[in-house]
Structure formats: C-alpha cells, structure tokens
Length: 320
Length: 267
Image (cartoon, rainbow over all chains, first blue to last red; front, side, top):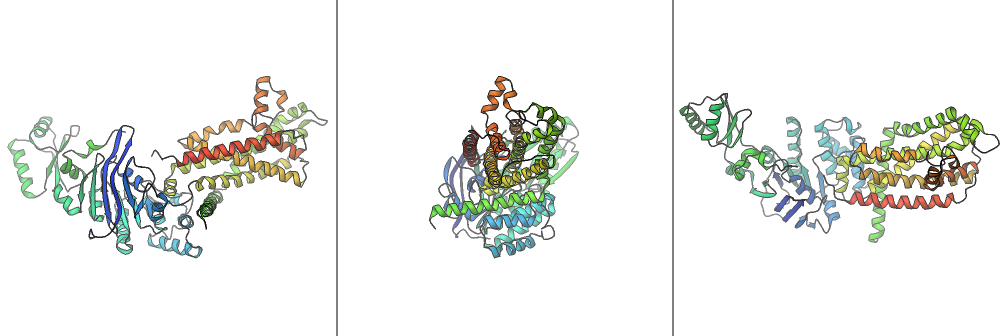
C-alpha cells in the first residue's frame, strides 16, 4: 500500500470537456501519488476514456489544469509524451509486423541506443511470454497476446506514468489474471504510476491503491477500495417471478434497485448474509409470493452505483 | 544542437523509422506491388493487342499500326500505374488511421507527421518498382524508347515529382474519408484522368468540351513530359506545367494532410 506522502504523478483540477451540448466531464479533480495504481471506475460512456485521452495529450480539455509527471499537459505536451506510456482500449499494435518488429519499431521511435534495441525487445518478449510468437505477424495473435504485446510496446520507452484504458475488457478470465499480475508487478518492481480505467469493481479492487468512481462526468466517490466497499455494503439479490401478478406486487412492496419487466426479475439490495436473506424470504412468504429463482450477488459496479447515486448503472449511459 | 536543427534531425530520424515500417509491410506482402503493377499491365496489353491495331493507324506518323501505338500508349499506362499505386496508398493510410497504432504514435514524443511521411516515401519506392515492372512488360511487347541516359534521368525525375504530388494528395483524401472503402472510392477519378487526357489517344481526336478539359488537366502535361523525354516528341511547355502542377498538388496535399492529422480525433 502506498502512503499519500509521495509526490503526485498526475494532478487534474476542474477538468471539463463538452462535445456539442453533451457535457462529458464536468469538473474532474484527481491527485495520484507517484508509484501507485489508480483506477477510474465507471460504466460505458461515463467519460473514462475521455479522461485518459486528455491526460495523454490525445485531445484537449475545454477547461482545467492538468499536470503529468510535473509537466503541464496543455503547454508542454511533448514533455508529457516523453514520460508516459498509453495502452488504449483498442489494440495499438501494427498487425502487419511481427511482435519483435513492433517492439523494435518502438525502440527506434523512443531513440534507444542501437545496441540496446534487440536486448530490450528480447527481454520484453520473454517477460510477456511472447517468445514463441516473436517472429509471427501480430495479426495472428489471440486477444490476450495482442494486449500483452500492446503493453510491452508501451514499456519500451520506460514510461514513468502508464495509462491503461480498460486493459482487460474482452479478455478471457485467464488472460485477465495474467494481465493483473503483470500490472501489479510493474508497480512493485519498477515504481511506475499506473492510471487505469475499468468497468469491473473486482479489477479495481484487485489492482488499485485508490479508486475514483465517475458518474455523469463527475467523480462521485474517491478513496481506497476498502473504504469504497464499505460505502457500497454488500451486493444484491436477484429474484425471478413466474407469475406476473406476484412480480407486480413484489415490485411495489420491496425496496427495488432495478427491474426487468420482460424477464420478470427484480434486484434487491442485500448484504448477502443469512440474516438479511431470511428477512427477505420472510417478507416474500408473508405476502405469499412465489419466487422462481433466487441469486445472491457479490458487489459489482451496479451495486457501487446504486449505493452512491441511487440509480442502477444502465441509466447513466448517455444516448449516443 | 540548436532546437531547430534538433527538431529537423528528429523529424528525419522518425520519418526514416516510419519508412522502414512501410518497407517491412511491403516485404511481408509483396503482392501489393504486383497488384499495383497488374492492373496497368492488363490495360497495356488490352490497349496494345485489342485496340492498338486500329488506334495506331489513327495516329499521325509514317508507320502507324500496333507498333506505333505501343510507343504512344506507354507514358499513359505509366501514369495509370502512378494512379493505381496512389489508390493503394490511400487504402493503407485509411487502414492505419482506423487502427489503434496511430493513437499510440500520437501519444509519443515523435515528429507528428512522420507516420504520413513514411507512407509517402514508402509509396514512392513501391510505385517506382511497379513502374519498372510495367516498363519491363512494355519492352517485351515492342516499346522502343528513344531516350538517352540523360533523358531517362529526366523521366525518372519527373516521375518522382508526379508520384510525390499525387501521393500526398491521396494521403490527404484518405484522411478525409472516414472509412477504408470511401478512401478507395475517392481515388477512383485519379485512375480515369489519364484516359481523359493525352494518355491513350491524342486530345485532337476528342469532342470540343472534352478536348478542352483534356488539354488543361494536369495529367496531359504529365504524360506529354514523359512522352517527350522517352520518345523525343516535342515537350513545348509541358515540362514547366508539370513542375508547376506537381509543386502545387504536393504542397497542397502535404499541408492538407498535416492539418487533418493534427486535428483532434473525434473517436
């Protein structure tokens, strides 16, 4: 765990970005200590990618003050670019080149000394378990391999601050675990700062020292994962009803978090412990409601949002 | 080093790196060069063997016939090769722009347009190779250029100018296009322009309106310059016009492409 005493790797104050009449970011404040992992948590369309794009100099904010590794993002973008590494949401590898050639391309663009190019590429290929595929075009790689190559390319320039935009979205569970290990090791071994965005509470919980929750262009909660989980409480219980009348009755009488009329399912906030479950079942029995199926969920993004905003997550997605 | 000379050195180094990237693409998929040469070669053979007997007779000159037509049509086919290759460039730029790799380049401390410069220089080499292949086939079917070494050099120089101009233009057009398919379609008129100039028949044989267009569009001086240098036909003012058009198109295309590249990605 990091202390908050270190210097800041990323600071942002009152960052605002508007596309047309859609306010994407409405005054974001961030302060990320060097050598820590920071997770920006939010659903699709919450503006996570926009934050990454602004801090990594891809797009300009309409207002706000941003500094990365001590450099002003607006006034000195090249100095920022020289210290950061970005692995975007969409694979940023050259599919026509082999894994090794991709890494050598990065070595050249980062102006590594000639004798360091190949050793650096070889070391990264070994570290990311890509040695066997080194001479094959990246087009032939699996999703997990592409992500690993992508991250390896980001590391060629020895960045001090690494932005990872949804690093595990679309990966199978095993590749996801591998990715988590790699990210954690980066921070532990090399002391880099990692700024990642994710839709998964579990991922933020596993990796991050601090989490910020983005909701309608604002940071609605910020703190260490434990603190956040304490606010969120437990998870929820999903109830499915076969009988439409029972469903209607339950929807009216219970403390419903979200409902799906088509499948006749209700989500009820719950700690998931025996006592609260028994209380819920008692209420259902009392009202003579027949439940077809009951599932207990550990907390996920939906629960975070419900706890923090009182809305289920689906209502936060702006129409595009 | 001063900051200006450092910037220039960086721009050169990064453009060279990006050129290497394009050359690797080319080596990995050599079929691209063959395709770029294939279409013009098919046109060359069609025009020479299917239409050449009749078209050649219509040309002014002592001999006429198919033999005369080969010598007339080759410069037009060479320009067609340039246009085909420009279309290939547009497609590969458009593919690049839709891939995440360009977003990565944008977040790196490298010369901004080096990725485009790499494309243009790569295309220049690829197009010259394609043209060599086309001229090889032309020699086999009876092309007899009269140029000496100096004039050949002049022809290569003219071609380099024309290729750079049309390639920068196609890079800009590819960036206007939001998709690969649109990029490809936007370049199609470039393929037709050699035909609507002096590439395949003398413009004198065209109806008045078309003749006017053919005489004033840039492909006609391009073709006449090549023809003059390779076959010894009169150059008149076509060399000057070629230099002017090329400078205009290259500069316009470069500035346009640069502006489009520096524009914020709209995701």
